[in-house]
Structures are given as C-alpha cells and as structure tokens.
Image 1 (cartoon, one colour):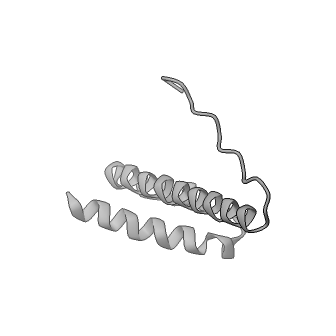
Image 2: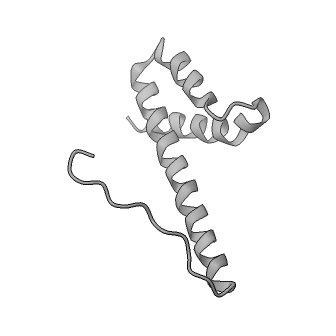
Length: 87
C-alpha cells in the first residue's frame, strides 16, 4: 500500500530533521517502538525509510569530502570495503 510508504517516509524525514533539537541521535528508535505498538507494518516501512535516508546522508557526505579533497589537491576518503555474502 503506497500510503504506508508515504506516511513512513514523511515521518522519517521529520524525525531525522528534528532529532538534533532533542539531543538524541537515535530518537528514531523510540519513534519506531511507539509506532510498532500499533502498526508493525508502518514500523517496518518507517525503519526502511530511516535507513535509506541515513545511507543517503553518508553517501552525500562522502561525495562532499571527495570533492573537497580534489579541490585541495589531496587524495579523497577511502570507501569502506565491500562486505561479502551474508555480511
């Protein structure tokens, strides 16, 4: 159901954008537990949206660091090693 993904993504965006104000960089875990008490389906969609958004932030930070290094004439950051099957 598309509505679940839309709701979960909107909530994930709002939580991640505002959790710094709360001084808790894992506040999304608390929100997930609250959601899970009434809708495990929404909880799963929310956590997927959180993971995707956090991964995108890490990727964007890596890109910015690589571009900055290039501008300064130094080598860029190292990418993590790939994980094998089954992590």
